[in-house]
Image (cartoon, rainbow, N blue to C red; front, side):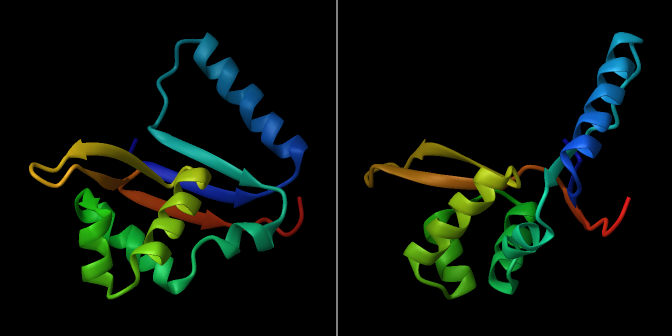
Length: 125
């Protein structure tokens, strides 16, 4: 996936986009590689990307990074970084995977879901 679009909107606008996507799929049209995440409450959408959280996403867009390495690079506590990773993972903006860490158990790798994330607020339709 090349792009994530986080937007606010109503349930009806979500279903309108879904019906349109289903029609395009039925007609065999190619998709552009973008995924749209919808939030009914714009405040909830903007609660996700604080300044510290944006730095985290910027770091993992460049390359997948272990949580332990993110804590050092961002100069933040491991608990705070792990919590932020969970918030972004629940929102669909990052993915995690467990990898063996020879001699030290496993490490959690974090990677961005897309190379680009756009946040769009629609105040009225």
